[in-house]
Amino acid sequence: MNIRSTVLTSLFAALIAAGAYISVPIGPVPITLQTFFILTAGILGGRKIGVSAVFIYLVAGSLGLPVFSGGTGSIAHFFGPTGGYLLASIPAVYITGMFSEFGTKMYHILNDQKPQMMRSVIIQTSLVTAGAILGSLMFYCIGVPWLKIVLKIDWVKAYGFGMGPFLIGDAIKMIAAISLGSLFCSRVYNFLHFGAANEPT
Amino acid sequence: MAEKLIFHYQARNSIIHRIDPRIKIIIIFTISAAMFTVNPLQFAVLFGYVLSGCLIARLPFTRYKKELRFFFLLLVVIVLSRWISSKSLIPSLYYGARFILVVAAGLLLTDSTAPEDLTLALYWFIRPFKFINPKRTAIQFNLTVSFIPIIFDSVLEIREARKSRLDNTWRKPVKRIISFSSQIFDLILQKAEEISYALESRLFDEKILHGSIAFRKTDFIVLILTIGIIAGLLLVR
Image 1 (cartoon, rainbow over the protein chains, first blue to last red):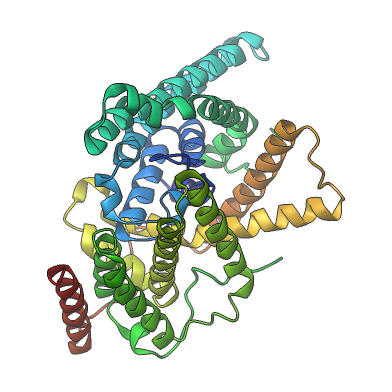
Image 2 (cartoon, each protein chain N blue to C red; image 1 turned 90 degrees about the vertical axis):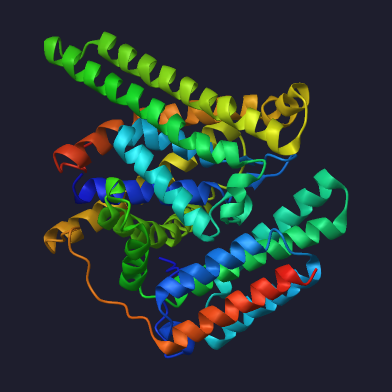
């Protein structure tokens, strides 16, 4: 990691924290933009930067800084109904980042063979989309069982509180993260690897 | 450009500013964890304790007016949305008060502690965990705290720019949301690039941490006092 990776990691951590301020409480689990920025961190930063950004964000929140959903912050959040979603953010960003890195690698390999080929873009986008879908699912895979255990409710209620109301919103956030990723991926890549940050995308 | 002051270090000569940042982190951590287990009366004591800390630190609330307006708006949204979803006013107001306490505690930590001291303090806590590269993590944490006001600043800047171009109608909302967020991200990324270039040109080395922190008698007194208050609150139920 160099200075640019360090700065980019901090930027994503701050964006995840700022995303938590846009929160709509509709039950035990509020709708926030955290997942949007977590996916964006994975797509644009890859595994290392994404995981580090989420880790910094979780540390800041557990220390008591107001960065968790709805502008709150405390270690107590990890033991509350939304604790599973917080913990799930690390594997979610890892998976999204892994697919995004693989997509970028494939894009460069294919583009080197036949430049300006549509196929390379399609393969990259498909891999990024697959990563974002799996990353989003990770939140539910860990968040919903955690919610069920903490609130001592049955599976139907757990899905009703912790998954059902968020599916459409998460799909929109995922599409927005992929769009933002495709708009800025070459700029972030250039910034991290070559220093030609202001090249047109 | 509207410069953000909130969550930025404000140099003052107060006892709060002089407290060891490690003690401040322990205090904020304990208060934020304790506020979820206390009853409203005990919460009021914690609230008063943090608020008096803000007053002793002489945080310039009048200069924060513009930024605090944003938090006030957020407070109103939080309380109203809680009220609508839970249909009970008192718990919603209590939730709002908890939000104020967290913001005040965060303000107290970031505005009364120099960034390099905060970095050193965090490094001290995470030093045993070698696998996470403690020095880099501490620097990233410090940069993250500095980035948060820059993000709010950028949002304000883009919003003003769009408004001045009479672009404040909400036709085609999805398209507008995407263009608005990409403009914000573009501006923030530009600022991140500028920060990186500035650090590179100063030959910034993330392996070196500047400054030093020392534990004094006053720090010990403040720590004992805070732990005493919180323990007392938790014991007297």
